Image (cartoon, rainbow, N blue to C red):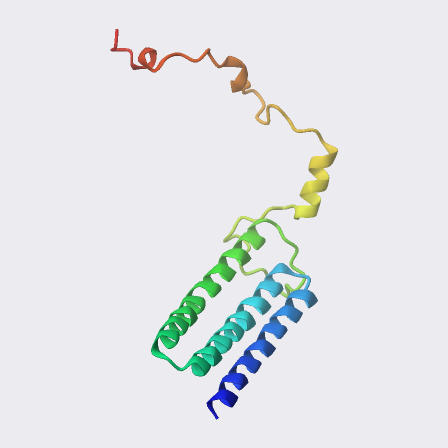
Length: 155
């Protein structure tokens, strides 16, 4: 009976992981992909670990499995939040955005998507001096001196 319960937990966990995979493949928007993978991936991995803990049955496996499930529950949502924030700030396209952008004015967003930025940098050569009126600091660098010369008091 315990083996059937363990296999049932693992099977449901695998179904959740397949749902995460299909969400990753189906959605085009990075925020939607993160949403699909963090939710389903966390639950799926947790259920598989619970099934393994039931199957193993000893205290050491239960302790390690419980610690791993807690670690996954704490870290995967935070990682998803940080990835979503980085995707938003970097200017990733948001196909699933309906209505007002709640983060408009809260986070500074890049005006160009990654594809537009790469296309722009390929067309124009890199500028040596991006700030007008400021001289290039690399041309006025003195020859390296010994550390004793920089102290001033060591003579």
